[in-house]
Image (tube, protein in one colour):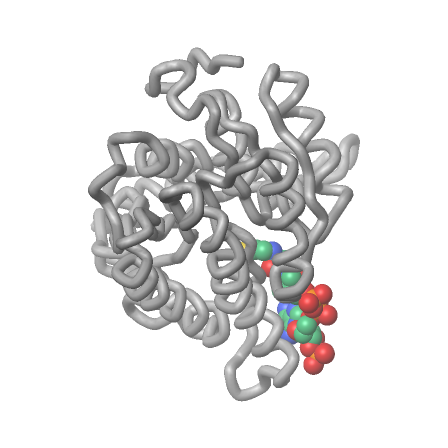
Amino acid sequence: MSDSTSVFRPGLLAGQVAIITGGGTGIGFGIAELASALGAHVVLASRKPEHLAPAVEALTKAGGKASAEQVDVRDLDAVKAMVGRVADTHGRIDLLVNNAAGNFYVPSADMSPNAWRSVIEIDLFGTFHCSQSVYPVMAKQGGGRIISISMTLHYRGWPLMAHATAAKGGIDALTKTLAVEWAPQNIRVNAIAPGPIPTEGVRKAFAPPAGSGVADVFAAVEEKMAAHAKRTIPLGRWGTPRDIANMVAFLASPAGDWVTGGIFVIDGGEWLAKPGGWGTS
Ligand code: COA
């Protein structure tokens, strides 16, 4: 399989085995698409079979190598079992992308203990569970790459997202610690902090039902969104899953050999710009 839209050379990741949590949709699927286009076997690991099956079908139809593992990253035993199956089947694990995440807006004063726990457990515990589980496989084979998807919202504080910002701050800290601790095993540990990326899932969720007669309204919303991006994102557009996948491919390739402990912001300059201020007249 090759991808004429990719800037990377065909076969760049040939022979690699990559586990991508939450790889069935959104940014995770974008990463899976590029990694499989570059020759990796991608294992999509997520909770929802209804996301996994169509994603694997799409990747294999395009000529890539892909398989699915149903797992909840909050469950350490289940994660260990999943990693064991992948290692038994493929003999190695070169890349883990910790992409699975949960999120919703909720006032901190009203957040239930379970709401707090569910996001912290998916994002932070999940990242640690998966990283710890691939460690023995990567250490034994002489190295590997772990890339966690973080965010930029905790750099300046983001009301109504105490759980997610706390979890992603923890992921950043974990990235730096594991990078140093596991460098002797040649395991490179990095994170990517994406800016605003309206994924297909988000678009579908807000799309009007077919035949509802509100397509014009939707087009107007799209136009407004583009104008908003122009105003608030210095590089003038929303991000795409491919923007993030490109950094994953770079880090997973030999170009990333001497890169560890980094947190790479890929956001068109969004978080550096003054909230609501950049480009506004
Ligand atoms: N506002 C306030 N509380 C919320 C909430 C919201 N929008 N959504 C969920 N919660 C609370 C639930 O009420 C529950 O707490 P409770 O038991 O005290 O009522 C707790 O969070 C767990 O929610 P639940 O949906 O049962 O948990 P889950 O473990 O099955 O799933 C999520 C957790 C985060 C994946 C799920 O809430 C979800 O699907 N969120 C939106 C989609 C999403 O996050 N996608 C990823 C984008 S990064």
